[in-house]
Length: 604
Ligand SMILES: [Zn+2]
Ligand SMILES: [Zn+2]
Image (cartoon, rainbow, N blue to C red):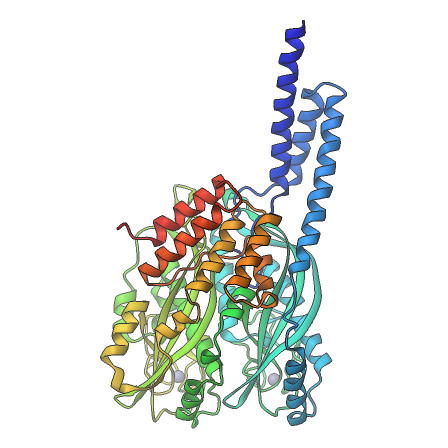
């Protein structure tokens, strides 16, 4: 009899532990994929209410009274404690309040030059854009927001909708709360002004696929994100955010606008910055703090390039970067859908030849977003201006076969490629944008087609006469070679190595250490303490990197590695060290390190 009780107690303890373990796993935070394009490693097993109820029923019937209720009591207590801990940690999430005096000076200065500019009106527009875009994202319908987002921005969202549709995914957003908005920086770019706004918000975000549930992820998160708005200098601000009417003639704007945001009556294009602030970029906190002043819109290179193309009133660095992102994403879409008509019109014949051999496998992106798009060089040859634009992207691929989805990348990876764009030095007046499906020679609409002649004016579409044409896409070392070979043609450059050094070994290591620490879905106090110490030791201003802590906690930081193998090994060693800091390397940490090793470290 005694023996039986002891045995039973063992059993009870085991059952209790299993139940507690299962409940605990429900409280871990999964990753997310909201409109801003955040969303690190795929979440996998997202817990839900159904699972919880199942476990509760199991406990009530399988564990004898009164122990079943003791266990349930413990679970409730743990849940409450877990939530409380989450709330405490989100205190880390802060807006960049450092140098507020300097920021205020910049704004005051701007207001002196632009007396009609009103900070509160601007912030209200940012808030409206933020809320409307999250809604558009959830509904996969950009009707209401198309008029004030750039073509590149449209493409960033559009490509994700296409991938989500293939994977039968939807993103459900609840409890969206904008906590605060501040103006972080104002830049001057050609005839345009750019305002970078920091947005502090929280959201409940679930990424769901009924067909491939293993890709599901989501959870609650609090974050800071940077949204950049561009406008032509000195124009009178209309309000594109509050109205669905054409800012020029007042007619109703089309609700189903796609690649072009144009009034059907007066034909004006609404999103070129002639009427209001246009959303042109969304940047995650970790990418934003990595942006080097050398790569700003006011760098020596940027000023030189604006000088080069000053005959073109609509040119700005932001605009060319937007075109590059737009084309780059359409090329990825063409490749995924194995449809060359999507990219034919804006790539050179030579590049087209190379790009149109598609992979046999059915590969789709579970995540694809652009982290950073930066002009890094300008050259001239054969009476053409050639601009080099570095694009850093994050992606996670999935292979579809026999109705099953297999993750090709166990985590979100990042890579940098450089897009070369050419246009004649003596170019004609551009009447449209190929990237937005309109003919640069006559402004007529252009469909997805492999025909390179405009059906209205017969002009050659992919000609460098009136439009920037993509002539090449190069990896980091390819670009380095290209630069060496064509050095004499370069008018100005910041060099791909500088782009890499925007993010030096220390930055990579710190970023990756945070990813390792958060690998088990939590950010233990001990680990937080270690991260703060490391930040201090490596000379970071803690207030500048605080958003990174929160991203780590949300699981939305991604592994980043430089090209250089030696640097990679150094970084990997630091990551191993960080994993062992709390006395043991967890299974998740082990898995992550193993993946990183496979993807990034060459066998000696
Ligand atoms: Zn109109
Ligand atoms: Zn034409």
